Image (cartoon, rainbow, N blue to C red; front, side, top):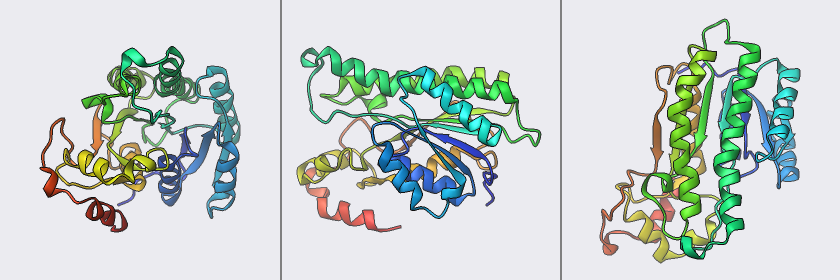
Length: 282
């Protein structure tokens, strides 16, 4: 099916991370032009893009999502280069791996997580909406799309990571509000949220090498398997597509194997090696 994303301009934050790279690849496969934001790992992002066959359709942008002025400059470059931005994926995020209850969390960590994950997403959305207001909607009626990367932690919570869970839960309020605001700028524009569960990326790879941890987290999933970054990326592409999701807005789509906030399987029903073997299947 034609996703109608060919030649569309996609602004993606957190493009240097595991999910970000797969999202970039997925949009590139649809023929989109890519504005890829990076910050701490910007040189890695540039090296990654330089090695891709779609590099001529990509623009690497160095910006800190916690700095609204830097995001404004990034969108200025996109509009100067391609004239508009059709899709925005607010994907940048951090997850401190150390488990600590809220009463033992230092102020610096809480503020840092909220600044990147929640406020960074809000500043990204604000800059996108401002750019959309400047250019106006497309003449072909293909509405703009804004997609946030959330987490199941925002829905079910995550012990030892109250800062992260709160930052992702806050995205619900943004989605429910911005779906109404963006339609005042572009009557066909949509806003949605993708919620990955445990996904195999560098950010959590150490935790997922522990058999007991894998068995514990997958015991809450109907499918008893871990997500791959490309599973998340394909869902983002679906939500961004004006053909495939033209009437989907204000929704939170889980990519979590049917996760619930309770145990669905007993310990003997889950095998860590079998879970890992499923990652190689497509």
